[in-house]
Amino acid sequence: MRISELARRAGVTTKAVRYYESLGLLTPGRLANGYRDYDEHDVRLTREIRALGSLGIPVERTRPFLECLTAGHRHGDDCPASLAGYRDAIAELTQRIEGLTARRAVLVAHLRQAAHRGSRVSPANGEGDLMTDYTSLPAGLPVPEDDGAAAHLLGTEVPHLELQSTGGTAVRLDALGAGRTVIYIYPLTGRPGVDLPDGWDSIPGARGCTPEACGFRDHYQGLLAVGADGVFGLSSQEADYQSEVVERLNLPFQMLSDPARSLARELGLPTFETSGLTLYKRLTLIIRDGVVEHVFYPVFPPNEHADQVLTWLRDNSL
Image (tube, rainbow, N blue to C red; front, side, top):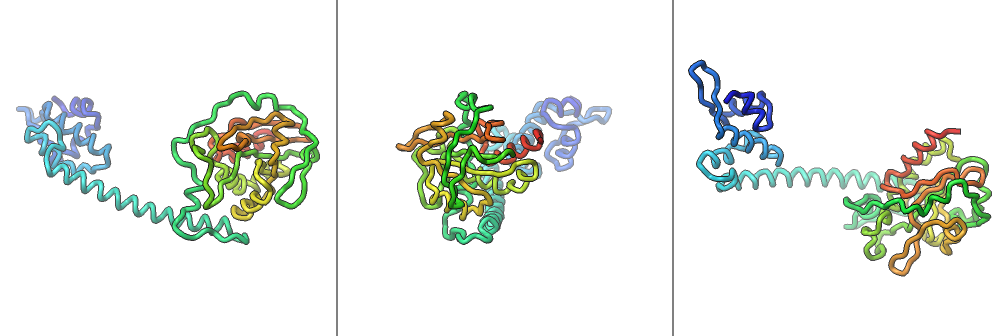
């Protein structure tokens, strides 16, 4: 067969086939007119090279696998030399992972230091990785679905309700002003050394309160620049607990404490129960002149939510 047919059947380019030949991995026959003549064995070898490349094994290191096939084995890794090729590739990958892990640790240290700069709370030291545990999200978290529990909120008047803030004063929700105020409502913020409720990561939308807070911290000035008059976080945690979070994460805005879930009763906000606790489901209200102008629900992923709010404010400027 011609080189173009070989390339098509093996899923590679003709340029790749010529490169394999230059390395001596393919040795096609020659026709009387001088053209290369490839056979089914060449197709098999080329496919093996492509498959090994998808595993991260460079073309130059596929020779033991190809020799194993040429020797008549059913699989390219039926020979000891092929297994050694696997081990070498794993060793190199491990070395790369260790290098990336070291770089990540340095970045985490810089992030921790920057987040606590000017704060009276010192970054945690020791073996625990604060940033991994609380400001990053594990893969595979369940995505919350829109159950319609917030559909009634748009256009609703904010109740006459005072909530304790981390600033040491009470904040009246119906007296926030004529401008736009962002209130992001969340279940609870984790704290280093304190276990989260059992099965927390399996509850759709539960995990991610600290990444969400850090997002609003990092986008705070941008939110003000595109029309937000203020930003508040709100949960059912006590104000003292939230004050520690504000200090530890160096948040530039206040948190509101609603341990009795008064706002949930007044507005019919969605909640859930776990480990004997009744907690707010994650949602965000844009309040303007005492009325709910916009609702974000459900919120996912929480670490990107501040940017979503920023985009909405920018696209809906007054």
